[in-house]
Image (cartoon, rainbow, N blue to C red; front, side, top):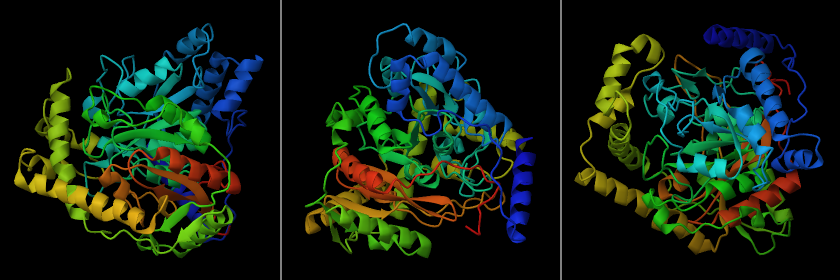
Length: 523
C-alpha cells in the first residue's frame, strides 16, 4: 500500500510539473503546535492552558493525520503505547527541567526498555525489545521527556548496500520529504528529520556515522548537531562504527537543539569514548545574541561548486556573517580534502563487523553474528531486499579482526588527515573560530531503482575526526531547504552553537513544509 501511494504521488506531481501546472499544497488539518518550541510548550503548561497529557495527545493526533492518513510521510515507525500514561504521570510531578512533559521521538536504533521494539529498520530485529533503556533514553526519561515513539531510518543506518535508497527500511517502508513528497529525506536519520520538520514531535534524536544527522537536517530544514565523539553516549544504540558513531539533536531551532543537547550530553562509564568527556551542563548559555566582531570564519571552498544555486545561498550566508561582525577568511580549505574517502570506508567495514558481532552476542536475539544477518536477508530476500542488496554486509564480513595491519593503518591515516593535517591545521593556520561549508544540496527525487543521487556535502571531516558540526537552515532552492554547516575542533559545541544562533536569529530562514506532491519548479 505504501509503495502504491508513493508511486501515485510521484506520477501525479511529475506530470503537473511537466505541464507547467501549479503544484497545490497537500490538504492537511491545521495544527496549533506547528513550529512550537520547547519554551512555548512549557509556557502553555505553566499557564494551565495545556498539560503534558493534552500536548502528547495532540502530537499523537498529528502523527495520525500526517504520517498515517494524509501525506503519509512514513516518518514514525512505532508509537509508544504508554506515551499518554507517562505524560499523565508527569503532570502529577514537580517540573524537572525544560524537557519535562515534552514529547520526543527517537531513531529506531536507540534502545528503549519498554514495549517498543528497537530494530534499526530491519525485519530481522522486528521482535527485539531491549531489557533496558539506552543511556540517552534514560537521560531523557530522567529529564521528564515523553518518549512518543520511534522514527524510521535507512535500514541498518544505510550501511547494507551500495545501491541503497535513503529513508527506506524493510520494517518501515520509504520515508518521504515533507517539503516535496517525491523527494528524499536523506539518511540515515531520515525519519527523525522528516518527523521534526513536519511537527510530529517537539524535538527528535538522530544518530550519525557520516552525514546521518547533517544531511537529513539540511534537506528537512532543521538544525542538527553532530557532537564531538564521546559527548553523547552510544550505550544501547545499535552500532555501525565505534570510531564515528554518535547521537545528536535534530530540531527546528538552535535553541531547542541546545536544550536537547544539554540533556543528551553526559559522561557514561560504559562508553569508552566518554573517558575524555569535556561537555558542559547547559548549552543554552551559548545562546547569546551579540556582535560576532573578532570571530573568524573560514570558507572551505572545495566543498562548493556542485550546485550554483547552493553556492549563491552560501555567498549570502557569508555576507550575513560579515554583517554580524565576523571576519571571513576565503578560502580556508582543508589541506587533506578528499584524501581519506577510501580509508574511511575501509575502517567502517572493519568496525561494522566487529561492533555488530559484539552487539548481537550481547543481546537475547536469534542472530549472533553478521553472518546470521546475511543469511536471514538472503532467505527473506523478497521482503528484506526487494530494491537493493547487501553488498556492504558482505564486504564487511570479508574483513578480518581489528588487529589487522590494514585496519590499524587506515584508522591512523584517517585521524592524521582529518585532525592534525585537516581541521586542526586550517584552524591553526588562519586562527579560525569555525569552518563553513554547504551542508548539502536540495533533496533529490527518491529513486528505488537506481538508489540515491547525492550531489554534495561536507560532513566527512567532522565525522572522521570525531569533531563537532552544526547545520542550520540557510535558504531554499525551488522551495527545498538548504543548510550551511559549521565545524571545528573537539569539545567546541558552545562556539558552534553561538555562531549558528546568531546566524539563525539574523535570517530566520526556516519555513514549515507544505507537503507538496512534488517540488514547485516554477517558484
